Image 1 (cartoon, rainbow, N blue to C red):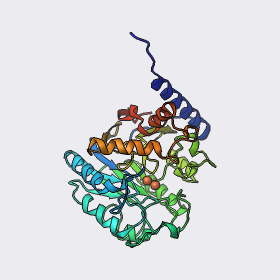
Image 2: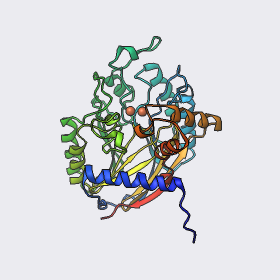
Image 3: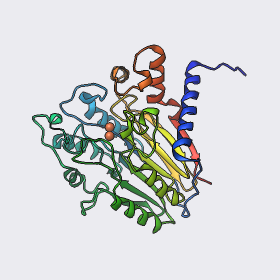
Image 4: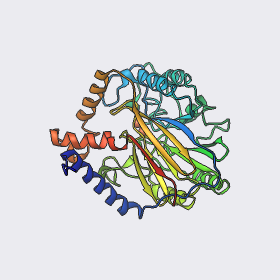
Length: 358
Ligand SMILES: [Fe+2]
Ligand SMILES: [Fe+2]
């Protein structure tokens, strides 16, 4: 057996070590979740995140000129999976809260064979900064967005959060930590939702819940630490929300977020498994299919079926995007590019499975 150890593998190991240390520092010890009581068979579902549709866009880090095509291609690919019980669109559907872009993406999402749900991201309502507004667009408030996607998780109450039963024994919860009217793109989960969430979990302890929230509840890199340039990928009261979820970990073993635009990643903290989803509109442009039952979860991320040249442009645009690179990799060279690709592709997580047992 060869003991060859590539530089990429070495870097990967370093990243994992750093992340693990970070987790220990921030969140305490790791644990697996206990299984839910009710056997609901196996349920398959898809996740599309951060499509950032813009009908007048140009291709930068976000491949806006191709954004509608990216959603259409993702929808067509997901429609080949007849087993899907639902698809979640995990926020940032729009470039910046434009009604016209909402109409464009809804026209594509409505072609999904499976029912689809939506949670709002920080780009799904009128930006607080006037300089972000563009002529030729009408802008929606977050309440407009919720009304526009009523029936896709949101109900007639107009509330920005919801619970939906998929099958007896499996429920989906959509949360919203957005701060509309604030120039900050981070979030805080309000007390109203914390109390509602606790009520949902405490009154459905025999069911398994999958929570979807656009913002992250864990930090994935050093730049995301409090005070860092990317601190707002994680909500301010994440420790409080995680503590609540851990209290009911047997009933809520899985949380899935978007917002961070890195390849699928997973962190286990005190019985709860936190996933962050790749964007279908920035490198590596992937969507995810999960299979879940009371004993475990498996997943595969698939590349959005767009032309090779489009993917190559997305990768180059990502590498050239100073803001999105890790601070320690600000200067481009082959070594730092490799570290950036490791974080953003995270290819080791393209497929996997884990037991949801203590
Ligand atoms: Fe996003
Ligand atoms: Fe976002």
